Image (cartoon, rainbow, N blue to C red; front, top):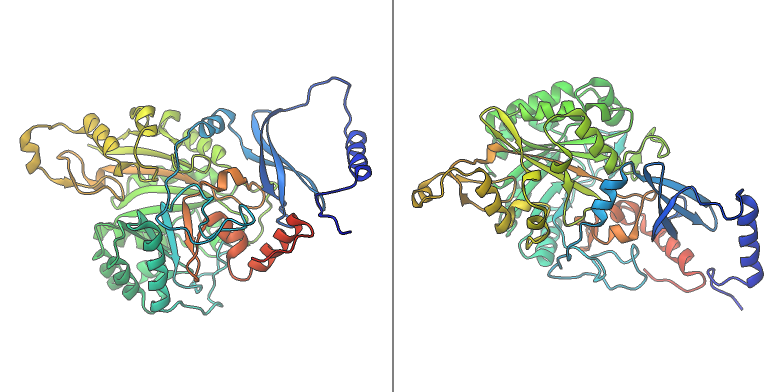
Length: 499
């Protein structure tokens, strides 16, 4: 009789327990060196098998303790800030459903992505990857794009993927045109036109900026897609060496030319910083200060490296950064934000932290900490774009608008951040707002099934499934679904599996 892997004879279990006792030196009745906080499920970073994991507090940090039957014990740092981690865990709000689910819940998270009905959050941001080709071959690239890859998706395929986003979201909050490097797609502007024909509230372009820097006419055409359009510009450092490590080239002059063009066109831009511990994490404050001086820049997004795809010269034991540590470094390196200003984002508080500020009269005024927490938690939406919520808009205007008279109806129309519908706010303009966002994508090391169920940044699979960014890069990109099937089979023991 073939027993499932998880059903072991008593003698085997006894041996395992005995081995654990003999391997662990301790004094009878002594305390463990940590506080056990909760139990979740994670992945073995070697075989991607789903395993139990304890969340523990030790020496001011938060760790996952997990054990794979085949590859042994692993201790993974998941936060350097216990109080902020606890605040994130206590930021609870009901998730928002998509209009459509694409796959059935059969084997359980993370093996049913598509979205399945067990996923807790709709898509706040959906990436549509239009090409695998890139004009750079970055040593760090979750999509493993490069000039050697030669696959552009057809316009028809991209339109199908856009339709899948609309099917799931009806009026998607944010769609990000991505790649590869999307600006080199031969039908790039046809794709933007196709996106514009759909009820997408806000469109973003994820780009390394090379073509914007090199092609003035291209940049000019981009500006025509505003105002609900934003450039998500790769911008990892103000120094040469980190750029060579992360991008394989010194791109300082290229970034400067791109920003000059974007400033000239007043094309809304977010700087996107990939962070590696000990490489560029000492520049967080300097990049925020730099961004505040660029007229076109509406904010900075900091993304610690996700150990997925191509990650050359990356040691997860020493090169990883957690969201808590990035937040601590941000607060230490800039005087703009206080701890009250950089807070968990409702839709996925474990992995998203955000701070807003106003740029008024040459001064920068932190905003987030001035909005009562109960207003945030009672808001009717979970989206990462808080300012879409009428209650929050009212709170912002109460704080910063100087005119509430009937005459204010004749005032200028302003947009707050990236997706705020046009509203009357005489003293506020889109250029007054600035945001900092920390985005931590889960990988096989820090994977937490409890958390991944709330992810709201998703990628469209070419077959139409809408898959969380975290699991897409681990299991569903290119040919990785074969490894997924193997991981499911290992978890299920002898039970046949069909994915």
